[in-house]
Structure formats: C-alpha cells, structure tokens
Length: 133
View 1 (cartoon, rainbow, N blue to C red):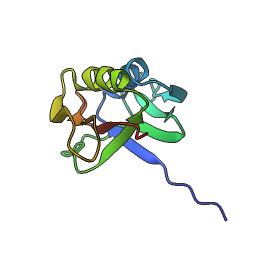
View 2: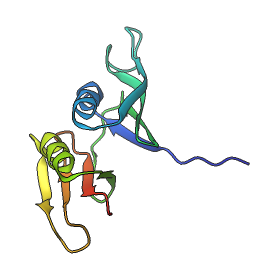
View 3: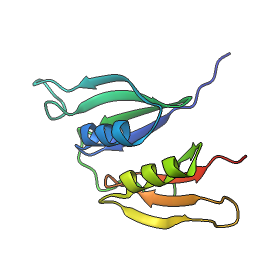
C-alpha cells in the first residue's frame, strides 16, 4: 500500500503570477508541469488548470479556481521553508514579502536564529527559517 500527501494551493486567477514569483525567489524550485485552460474552459483561457511544482523534496499542486468563491488563503496554514544560509533566507523572505504582509519579521525568536513569517501578495503564508547546524 502506498500513501502520499500533497499540498494543493487554489488561486483565483493568479496562479501564473505566483509560479513566476516562486520560480524567481526560491532556490531549488522546479516547475514539473503546467496545464492551462483553453478557450473551451471551464476556467478563463490561459489560467492554470493544474500545475505541479517541487521545492526540494516537496511536491505542490496548484490551480486557478474556475469557480468564484468567498474565501482565500489564511495564515493558519503555512508552507515552511528551511534554507541553508542567512543571506538566502533574507533574500527569499524579501522577495516573497514584497507587496505581501510580514506577520513576523526576520529575527531570532529563540527557536531559530533567523526566522520570519509572511503572507505573499497572493495570500499564501510562508514560514522561512535558517537550517539548524
């Protein structure tokens, strides 16, 4: 028996822009597959029907919802990203926080010498930390 848990992110028409930001900002980002809606829909033509990307060993699926809904991302669920060195943590945090919202600025909170929590401009919550020695 095989069991697999995958993260699914549902955007409202911004998945292409989010994928571009993550590809630019995050080391070891790999776009595995991206399928777009065509003129037949049901989503807006050119929006993401389904994309799969990997960061390190973690696979994430994302879509642009063809259905309008009254909810979005919440910080109660975060993608936790651990990076090897402080300059990379600082660079990735700054790139993802641009036009987003810092929930906990990069600092030493006792449990990690360089930790920050943010929501990117698409509402996805990220906890970014320095890899422990």
